[in-house]
Length: 511
Image: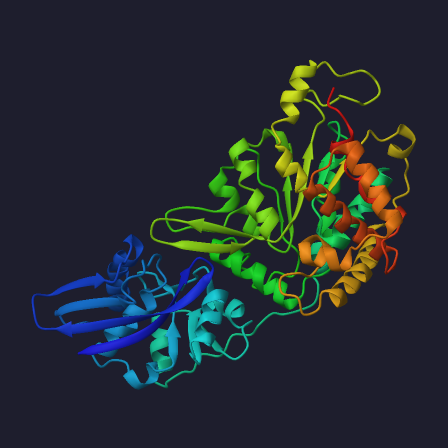
């Protein structure tokens, strides 16, 4: 007898529907799984067999063939266990086949028949809805995550036996409840306030511009100046995520298996800070069946690279595509996948190997050639893609010992949201452009057209600093953000002058 059960599967962060076909025929008792099934999928037959036995079901000794269609796509993971078990039960008449129509099942089975959570349920639920599935059955721990998708009934089950009772009509499984709320205030509290950082007023202003326009930021200063402390407080001044942004970020975290079980929907912007020993695959994604890397896990949030020159050159150069295009394309012999990676890049570095070059106290012990070699670890093309280069100096003793802490993040966040509202109206109807930092050449020509006075100022700056065409465009985008913070419809000389000041790596020599 032939039985068919639908089960969603992942391909990158996208989902497609797999038809699990179970045939019980005449022949020597055996179980074979075909359809490009990887190791964990093939091993599932042993888990399923034990789960069925321990749940009180017996399968007659027959030749059993399981096909996972479409058969030309590789299948991996343990998510097909539940569908395979139900296919066997339907093939032996223990589950009514009519109830399986327009339903899909996903979950890993324990040997005792319990259902264990799997990754990527949000993407699977979205894929099921697109495919016309009406009901998706998932492990109970994944129910709240899948229930975020509207127009699909998501049922959270604790065991195989509970699913069978539901299909037989004996005991219904209640639908999962989505946990969708406003901004995560507790998350903001964990981030910390910019007012806790002593001094550094010019750096805080640069961070406000960064947050308002979605620009990339480089902090350059000696050890202990507060670069890391400042960077970790950037998410606290970014605007709250929309529901769409939350779902995009949640999908990636769920597929990667790093989603907090107690937080089925991300409500705070991600902050990722990989160590400088990270591989290029760990940063941009990779593997035989590619998985998201740090740049994708930072989607709609912040990617912080501390001690930038300590990262391997190959790793840093892999950043070019995600910084420029907002996505990563991973091409393999059998598969090519695209992962979103629209993030704010914040990098921090010392001015020299010892860290004290240019601090005004002549403490630097580095040879000029060592300083040049150290700076050259970060390529010019990558620096060009960073909009703001900001020096971070030592904090004066008087400011460092000040006792009063004045909250600043809330006020800055309010100004950032007002500037983002202007940009939202400006880019309404444009696909993939939501803030100034995401503007392409067409948007720059339309929304950043300089006046004659601004043009003369830009020409002098480009002639004196020798800026590239990319740096010129980034100055215009930053100037547009500064104007938005001033609620100015036109970019003025003061806005451009401030944007030029944020190109410190173009203005200073390392020796």
